Length: 358
Image (cartoon, rainbow, N blue to C red):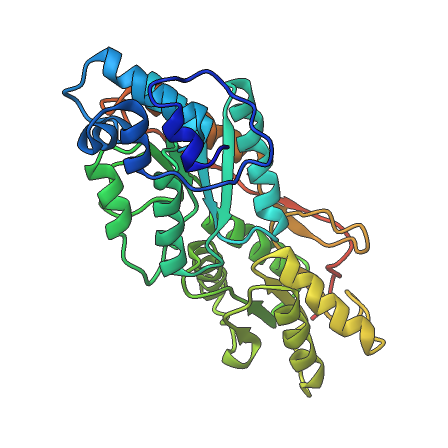
């Protein structure tokens, strides 16, 4: 990139020039206007992909913008070719293995189409989620994949995307929003783990739920309560924890369970990361899973250090489905019928649940 002085000397000339010790500056629309001899309104209109300009004028502006670095090359090309060949992926927690596998699936399909994926995390914060979506749109991505917060939040920003015909696909459904989504049958997953514990003779069961904004956690907890209720059993309040999100939360819950005079014979964690925290707490006190308490989780992440009974969730396959659905919308246009894909969850039995005799 060259100094403004050199740019002005090159007015209407777009051949590369080698200048030693050039000073790097950030170009403005005014600079491009002086370089091209066009009005600032013309420069702005072309860069914002507005109608009303001849192809010759558009190419003159885009060539100058790309050659002298006014905008990233990929975006400049996208302005003239309609597509930037980029996707935006907004997930909840970039450190969670659940989203690592989902991201891998998205990227593999994107690569097949020659696309790059911009990734960011909302960190389970509604405001951050909206800001990240806007940041992706400012990059002129061709489409969005969003794993939104689904409980106790508003969805105005998602309805706005729909109203503006922005191609996007959601991980999870939003009430009243007629848009493509991919989701998991979390209620059935909760049913499977609870029935498994009952079959093993457990009647005193505890549950570690996630944040209030997590629909997966809510559905798994609801299923657990329904199954127990059908057997005239119930989750005791002192055995139910809410707001678990990471390993440290699992450790804290584990310590509380250890301190109880009477703890549940079996405990369900809404995800494997929290379950691993419980394991860590028990091991630090010389207690063992499942001898001192049976434990079960969700997600089936790679826990090489512990044989946890869990629920397998096809996140990699879901990531691929999200990407393929989005490309269908990008290339099919706004009239593309919404796709609704639901993946089943499957119990994976290992060695963390023992059989008890009542």
